[in-house]
Image 1 (spheres, one colour):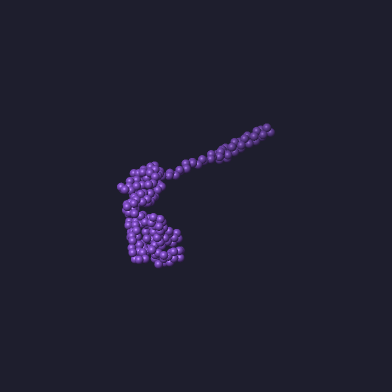
Image 2: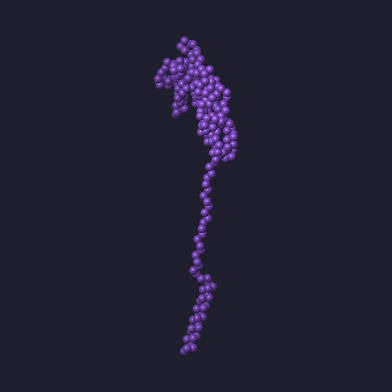
Length: 236
């Protein structure tokens, strides 16, 4: 776990306008909590702001060197309890620290980091990660940057649970062992509509007679007329 020294001073400034004035000076208003007591402090904003905006500050152990009015310095081991960020400017506005004992275990949430790709992904499966953080309990000096997860053995249709995780000695996982961390599901196959062959309409029966048939019919009619004419002439 990352450990960072921060130099701070007690502050007497209170209120929103005073807090804005501190930020204009490059300082950050903060509060140090210890066993129910709270001490308003101020510290350089640049370094702590970079850590908090990046997300690393939530899992960092800080050693605050606090100067009092009498120029006496006292160190406090702390972790971040809460902080406030301007949603528009993405600017750190305020932070709360909680003092801890290095010899007493604490509960903390740390990120889950997948180190190896599931074998099911290589076969075309789809990764669905249900958990991205996990709650642990350990000494402050043992807090990890995250819990590494080797998911290489997870095939299509299988899942990885909290109970499958391995942690270092002295560290305890508090999250439900039955909770699913990730699943590799089968790829979605799009149904292809069957090809329907076009049904051709039957050809219409030819109503007109071929030319040869018409000519033959005309010859027959002509012959019948000639025979009739000859018969009439004989009768006369």
